[in-house]
Image 1: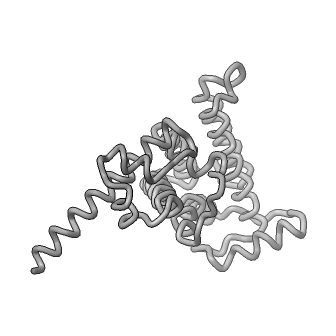
Image 2 (image 1 turned 120 degrees about the horizontal axis):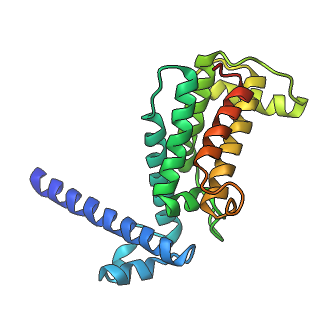
Length: 220
């Protein structure tokens, strides 16, 4: 009986993965026009059967979003360096490399919001993995406090209890600014906004990564 349950669980996991893989393929070709019925049709499933795996389109989108955040988080967490500065560079390049290799997943989590979809709380922890890496690097580097506007200071200070270190609010605000610059720069590259200016973007990206490290206070 246990073996039977294991076989059923394995079969369910395999079909769940097939559903997600087909949904990713459809997102790549059809953008936000994801449909459970279309996924079921492509897999040769009855449309009613797919709802036993994902009760709604939003449930399937949430699974894809969590997978994407988790994949990116794992890639960045695996980045290494023999100093905080090297770790910062490595983490930034890991984000970019993942984005270039997973363009449609990147667009799903950092592109235009899917109409009618509201991400649930389940996506918060996976989404936090990448910024927490940068917070950790800044903490290891001893990034200094800095003067920031009172509202920004309060926003950063409110985040500090959830952090793995005691990074000063001013330093955290700078990490947040660098984090948004990093993803803005990658989005510009992926969506063709650097064509005619900083394309190919390899050298520009490396230069910007070092400038962000200087801004945060990670010594050379």
